Length: 220
Image (cartoon, rainbow, N blue to C red):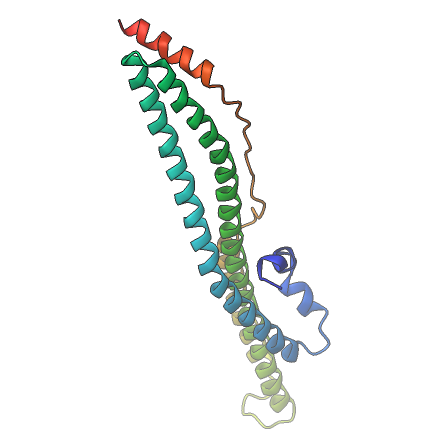
């Protein structure tokens, strides 16, 4: 299954919810970090092909639009030369190109939307990794503080029964977590739905020809 096919699952995942339900947070943190790294690697690998497809689609669309503009110019030149039949021929070719242009436009928008989704997923995975590292820092700090406090309680430390070591380490860990969460929130983007704009065209060579003739008459 491609990464894009798992887009909504990846975007809907919540590190904090998963860890809050974990029976063994330290173990599940390591497993989830491995999963995030695998997903991020897959996203980066697939992004290259998705962006290449976007570039190809954009180039094909722009070439088609250029061809339409060229045929329009040829039709105008033909009318100026008094050859309406040739002008009509150019406009009929332009009408066919216009039909293709609509399809190419839709194809480009679809490719651009896929590229945007890849970017969203990459940002989401990086933000999740940041949060996970912060949770790991907190957990490790609290475990270290708990061990230190245990030694204090057992009388194995010159600190006596003072529990301030635990409070200080916990405060430091929580502060680091809050800062990382704020950074992750800035990085994460929430707009994950691409909008497609479809416009119908009804090409009409005779109508275009009449428009060209009217334009030339105004310029005389």
